[in-house]
Length: 320
Image (cartoon, rainbow, N blue to C red; front, side, top):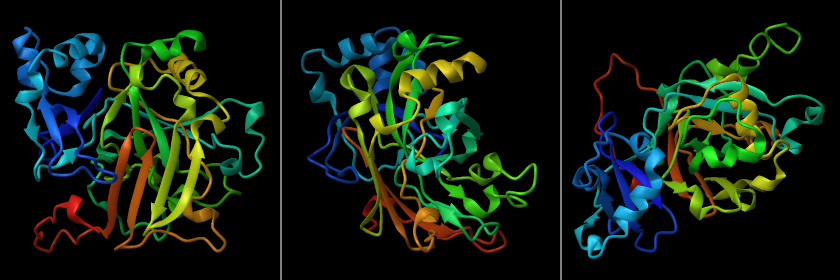
């Protein structure tokens, strides 16, 4: 199943994607979606967000398979697509989980590096990425997001994937100059949470692909381009610590609940790794996707001066 959230920011509703109308980029207005609230209510279940139904995916699949249900689908039209999980309880990031991105560090000898992104950093797959005035080194990191489906605490790696609801494309947007803080010589040099926690620094989507349709997540191919030029391209199999091992490791210290998200790390090719480094600027268009998970398209803009009057928002799915 492909599950998504549709509606204005802060008022998204859960849907299933029935037909993507052959889209090879941002979803077409002709795509057909099914609202899940009335479908669940028909079966005596109340849901507000996709997090509420992640523990009942088998039931949801059965409901969606009912005869003639597709006749009740709706055209997407020009409605906004939000993050599949618009306000996750937790977004746990993993640093330096691809060999080349680890820049020669011996990460195989130690535990994965974890950090948190605040829920306020999450935005939709076609929303703008807003560059705050505190950074001049805005960077991209395409990642595979793992969405937790059932409570997981100290789960062993061999059972970890049974706690996964599905997978989603993510961009772990980062302010590199803030991340370095006072410099590598300073004992508190890495300001990861602040550097990765500004609003819009975690685009997710366009949909959550359920785990039953992703039997080999290690085979997923991730790709990110900026203004049409490919910057990052790698398979999840190249991770230093695999998906099951990451879920086990994170859950050993952080009890996980349905809707929590683990970002599994970024492959090489980020802007700071270019020679010379190339960072994101207003007007840049970042496209990020993965096999079967759809493709995000986000435009970079500068944060508006709060003293100025807000301008109308252009439908981001029409951006080129």
